Image (cartoon, rainbow, N blue to C red; front, side, top):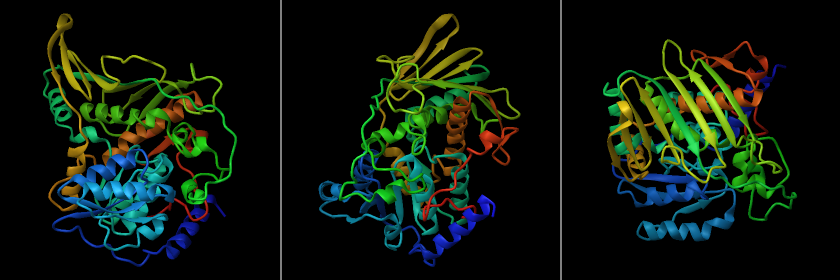
Length: 428
């Protein structure tokens, strides 16, 4: 039996046993959104804090594979929202069966983003999903299909889309004041931690390691896999191009006014991080072109720099025929002919507007500033850039059906089957 057929059957069988399989999700409320945060370490703590303090939402549930964190973090949430203590659930499948939940905020490792979003839509929940929205290109397409089929709001956590100074700068790029803008450079320069090898150890008693692994291949428990080190292993993460880099890729694509690319030519390697277990590049350079467009996007990454490029740790430069614009989280500036500084604006960055936009969209009062389709198109850049870098050759991409042309090895890496009850369905 072909793999795709086996996958479809497995997905159907799995769906029939899910608690919400025959449930109908409740509509968005008229007063306050009940939100469950899935994954409560790292980004999850920022999201639960943000949603707990918004006027239009409240955190009613916490979900994490490790029950160790529930007592302290539930108290933290209660303190932020007037004593209302969230319910704690370890298994996301049980969480999604709770009808009082209107939306979930997904802050898991990358390899869980797609399945949590798809299941959330099927359960009738709106979804706020952290970037990158998917672990691979096929997953991202299924997320778009699930959002549309179940008519759910799915917002991707690229918060720059809602930042006032980012909106102002992108409007300037599109105003014509830079002249014709043919090229953008997205850059990611920072000093990352290393991933030294450590031995496998027994699974902590409070952790459900099987659920944590989800659709990823089954492995022994290792603190590098479970801790922040997961970002640098291909089983779970997407490297820094899919981590911080996707923010900058999204801004660049937004300003250039382009969709998914037609080609990616990438270089990626470990120039500095030698002798550790990190699989993803510490140095990366990728060039993208787009169908029916003269626009070019260049991604530039260095994870060993104790200094910043262009004055920002991460950002985008838009090159026009009259001037160029440099944009980062703390502001933007325009440089004209003769390297003359036209002006510079400082800004502060907050993710609050992006969370507020999601809540308003769920209530039918706004459109999401980074709908799942926008997030998917930007994440395609990261996935193609990583694939081209890993394989060491340029790739041609067909945005119409999201396929790689003339390269069977690369095509086989567009998606993966999943594992056990954690299968990305062929049809949502």
